[in-house]
Amino acid sequence: MSGKKKKRRFLSSLLSYDMNLIVAVIFLMVFGLIMIYSASYYTASMSEIFHHDPTYFLKSQVQWSVIGLAVMLVVANIDYHRWRYFAGIGLVGSVVLILLLKVPGLGVTVKGATRWLRVPGLGQFQVAEPVKVAMILFSAALISSNASKIKDLKTFIKLMIPTAVVSFLILKISNNMSTATIVFGICFLMAFMVYPKYYPFFIAGGAGAAGIGALILYLKKSIAAGTAGDGSGGFRSARILAWLDPYSYESDKAYQSLQALYAIGSGGLFGKGLGNSIQKLGSIPEPYNDMIFSIICEELGIFGAGLVILMFVYLLYRLYSVAQQAEDVFGRLLVIGVFSHVALQVVLNLMVVTSLFPTTGVTLPFFSYGGTASVFLLIEIGMVLNVEKRSRFKREKELREARME
Image (cartoon, rainbow, N blue to C red; front, side, top):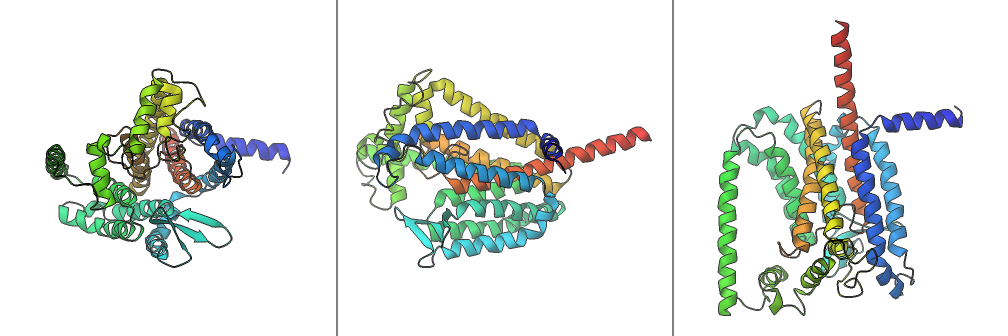
């Protein structure tokens, strides 16, 4: 086949996918790369660890983004039904990966948390990212196989047991409550979408919200009375106290949160200009990671931050549309899993950055620095593209057959 024919065939294959979804993903990726460079060039240029190279983080993220896009296109060409056969392997693999964190020489501990796995000769990756993909796949297969049986809470709870076990292992072994919550939340929302009755969850959610509200009120009264303690009971209790009373911990536990708020507040309507952030010059630790949204607000203002949020809303809208039009329950649940993953991380990250939630290590998809997260998120997008393409082709085929009759 000639080069021109191969090129035409590739373009024809690419255009057969949901271009609206692809454009939204590409926009977020490119915007994210720009902001990663803007947020990281000072840190990288001042550090010997990064060879004083201001483009260190940008080059690394571009490399992983290209790999992720290539894998996304490969996955988009694989019939998503085939992934169903690997659901059980995904569950077992998730447990094995989490347990490997306890193996000396393989588990990598950073700032007291063991969340990375070292692969000799290849580097290290964050275990949470492949586990998220594997659990979306496993839950989609499990729930779709039992969709007609989910008529009571007992069955619902049984289906959530494998996810609960994996989430518990993540929390216990890697001490990563945010990832454990996200994994459980993704699978919970997938099961919730096929459960026929919503009112038990609304009642439970209302009771839970009331309980959390009462706890927050109690802690605030304790802080005002000086009986809340100094947060030495554990880093999570310290984060909660710092969230409720940040100015009492502004030099340590609440430092990052307050600096992020200063960055957001100083941005105004249109920001200080791309690259002109002051807070990234040492005030916000690792501004290219969890707190990158505060740099977006400082440099691009409410306008830039609003544009980012709107693009995420549009991406979620496209994912929701694909889920609604999927040809079967398994495909619909796969897309709902990806939708839940993106939505939970975006909402939690924005709540943390704006101090609406205690500080936790939740990254902003497509923006926070991290190669593993980019690659596995793009794998999920590849699955969604295949679900959309196959479902659309099936509808078109049925329409043609109806017309012929």
